[in-house]
Image (tube, rainbow, N blue to C red):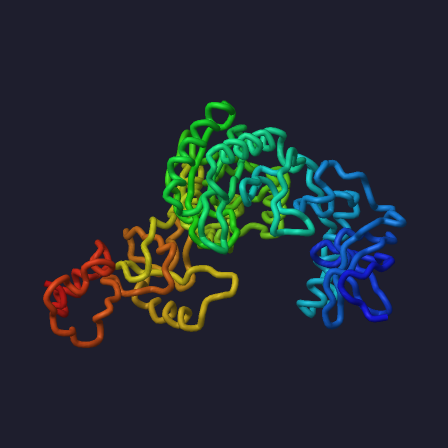
Amino acid sequence: MTLHEGMELELAVTRLAVGGRGVARSEGLVVFVEGGLPDSLVRARVSKVRKGFAEAQVVETLTPSPQAVPPACRHADVCGGCPWQTLDAAAQLFWKREHVLETLTRLGGLADVPVRPTVPSPNVLGYRNKMEFAFAGNLHLGLHERFRPGRVLDITECRLMAPWAAEVVAFVRDFCRATGLPAYDARTGRGVWRHLVLRESAATGKRLAHLITGPARTAGGAAHGLGEALLTRFPDLTGFVHSVRRAPSAVALGERQVSGLGETRLEERIGDVRLFVSPDAFLQTNTAAAGLLYRLVAEAAGQAADGTAWDLYCGGGGISLTLAPHFALVHGVEADARAIDDARDAAAPKRHRQLRVPRPGRRPGHGRPGLDRPDRRGARPAARRRRARGADRHPGRRPGQGGLRVLRPGHPGPGPAPAGRRLRGHVRHARGPVPPDGPHRMRGRPAPPLKKGRPPHAGRASRKGSGCEEARKRWRCCP
């Protein structure tokens, strides 16, 4: 029998694949079943047929799985936020460990890797300290649908966060509808409303609302009015931030913060570490589970009074500061400038005695040595070569060094720094070390003849700190 889209099959789901879909077989062909649970018999409708596998969605459950449980949320059948909500918590822990093993074995080619049992979260519901809600059309605000991700479901509750979040979402939805302004449309680049991000600090109980809009001219006034209305209606909401995002990708991350009301940053405490959380900064969304994670990382890392630890993609520095008392030096590497600022502020208390963290940096070519920006794809070969060539120009810095630096008393710091000299931190958003005077587009070749009118370097290159002053002296290319 040849499978085709739209046909219905009876399938016996045997296991869960990475990503949460059930795995079944039809005449030897693997079928990934959305909504299928292990050891269940379902009737499913084929949605896609590919070479070697097919995809289907559950239409009816004929024999329920012994691991199935009633959903806790009224939107469980439609909402895409909790695909495993109908799976027993113990079964979720089991299958997460199985997925780690499968990834290491099939993708990594590693055999017999010891994987410990999954550590359960202290809270199963209401554990999130952050939720991202999307706008769509005229006008919906909620979470993306499970089987139609392009549509947004107007939720009335969300069991992942405290009940106050759903009340704020309903208020914001009604307010934005009353303005008559549409949601942002990535296809046309028009519209206003994009995302609403809600945060709550478990340590202080303070709450923050972060509104992300498109670059429409009408966004500023409407967002400010919404912020004032929110703070008036919800006294427990201590801050409101408005950011703008121009990129069409549907990511709840502001590119530029426009305005703020009240407290625009939260303070959190995980274990013995005090952290600061900006509107766009990364922090583990499960505060209680993050404490367990930090403790496990510290146990696995051990301690070395004269050793060095590296925390890659450190975010606000939670793991870095957890490791700081056990090592002489901790490097935290992070690409987000706002997260770096949060980490520096969190590292400021005197309990670490001697702290050295990066100063705010500048873009490449603005007169300061830089560092290759961390990227999960790794540094490009050209960037690695530039970084290696630039190492001898700055003997007080090591190639690859950046982010948060926490030192103990008496530690000489990284590299052969001269005695009595305080090392400066690296640039946060550069792509490779450059000479102190900065690169210049005229460098290495004669200057072109001057023309009448606007100087050739008026504008981008003539900004303060761009190295243009040195170029004027060297090439006389600016009047």
